[in-house]
Length: 420
Ligand code: NAD
Image (cartoon, rainbow, N blue to C red; front, side):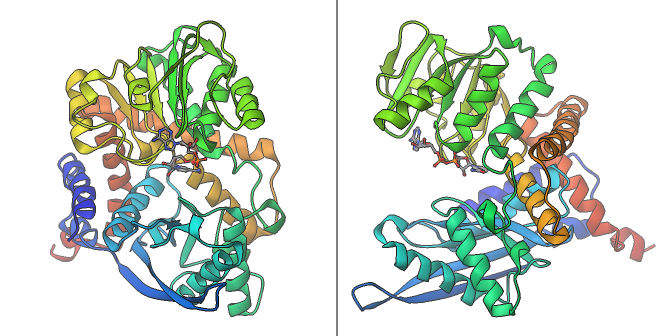
């Protein structure tokens, strides 16, 4: 068993301590339900053929068809795909989507492929996994280095294989091909709803709250924009090239305009002094709320003791290592975990699937209202479990999800039922 999957499964054992589980539940969740590996052989533009390793893992489908993105990255491996599929099982359960968890990946540096090679690779993925995925079986979505256009190619390929348009096989599609309104800012918006809903519990006053957002991309930008509009002071932002700190705050809209115009965050406008710093140093600057929105493993046992924020909201997947988590907990920092904070993305993906199946499309206010109706009560429940059981929010989110999965597993009758 690989290290990543091993670490992911530790969460299960940790959460199980706080529930009285039928032994069937842990047995069922011990290993992925099914995993398929394939080699994608495609014709390159220079006439040669190349093969790429690819995987899809369906971790558990007790609560419904499995759901999870497809990642294109040179370091993707089976261990990572299994760990991420496990993670998706819990994320879908936290927000009560009628889904299990899955994940897919291709070991490829997508930036090294031409547009046509990328299309051929994406279509080859669907050919290889056509019997594994399906609108009522396993529904992929974008992840690192896959995007709406790739989802459109994949839906098209699947539709050709099954002989009819089948948009519900995949989410994150372009709007014109059955995508949902509101998917673009859904992840940032979900985190925004969670934070605003728990403000009083967290002791946050918007006008006084200073926020640093690491990763000014899709997720980070939208989250910063919405918080700023409600009076939060955005004092730091960064991308892979530049990190900026402005104690008197900045307007994320103006910063984004500047980046669009110049191609860089450097020299972006601020309300007072603007200081350029390193990405690593930005995490340790003075603020109340730190919002890592870039990538994995940014806060570890080494830098966690230097973090000044009182609250860390994980908008990226896995930005805190287990060691970093421990160190932040020891300091009394409240971590709003990724499986809750960034679940707005998969929630609106679910809305897309529902709309595709119904053939009826919602307005933007509908999408926003329904997202809020899901994020707020689930955030409240996680907070209540934290208080009831005196545990950190991450463990509380896993307890909440596991409780739901366990209820579904035992609805078929568990050991307690069959042995009595
Ligand atoms: P994105 O590519 O739009 O943005 C990522 C941003 O992070 C970019 O601005 C990039 O320059 C910056 N970045 C990269 N490396 C960095 C570094 N070392 N330090 C600081 N900034 C760095 O991606 P996104 O869609 O915003 O996703 C961000 C994170 O959120 C990822 O971890 C992703 O898995 C997670 N996530 C995204 C969604 C979604 O719907 N997009 C849903 C759930 C989770």
